[in-house]
Length: 347
Image (cartoon, rainbow, N blue to C red; front, side, top):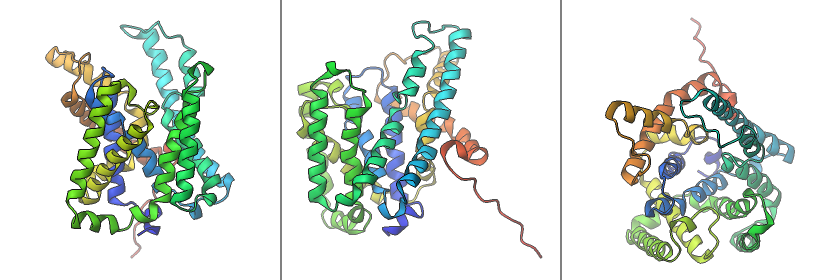
């Protein structure tokens, strides 16, 4: 089972990735950063992605450092540059010919964000974290060394966050936060992919209920104390609450996904999370134009959880045929090799 996770798709891993990207799309639809629903989603959804990335990490399958870097360039940097360049081209077209051109943003500002990996920042952070973890993985031999790593990353993150006037690149503190969850996935891989957690929960059905209760309790306390805008990838006011929220939220998703049966939709979404992440900015404009033309309604200034979930489903549905075309005709755009063509059997 452990070796299979790097050689073929595992349904519950795709389930976790599908739910994570769905929450990312939902979170981006919220226009009010202080809404409880947005704050709850942001308390764990990105960390879930990094944990899954660590879960899929296998030191023996990585090869040399040169191989690792080349693979990350092909699967992360190249898709980033391709799709961010397309976004920039659309930005220029909209700025020049759109009905309401956005003249408040200069043509060079988006290029700066692209060059410094602030646009679609997750891919840049994942690139750095996965390469750095490859270098330190031989020293992370178990949970004790993981706790040391987590303590160091948390301490450095605190030091960076304590001096915002230092004008530090935003992705630097994010890297230290992400490293904790990536390393946790890699260290816990042997345990998490086994059937032991499944048997444990089946024998003790009260465990998920307890985790959910703890998750909600910590969230209510944190939200009341700090407000929704404080619960984010760079949350640093209360690390105890931060880790409690993230780990309990991830645990709930993990338990649920281990029980969700094989599902073609979740498998498709989970297999194409990077494409959805890179293109999820386009459907909102289509949906907004449709609702205006068809119903004369524009509620994008006050989107609640229900509409955010509905729009997220519609967004992924809109992107699905485009994703299929990319996978069929341009898999290189996301670092994939072309699927082997079936050959007719000879008589």
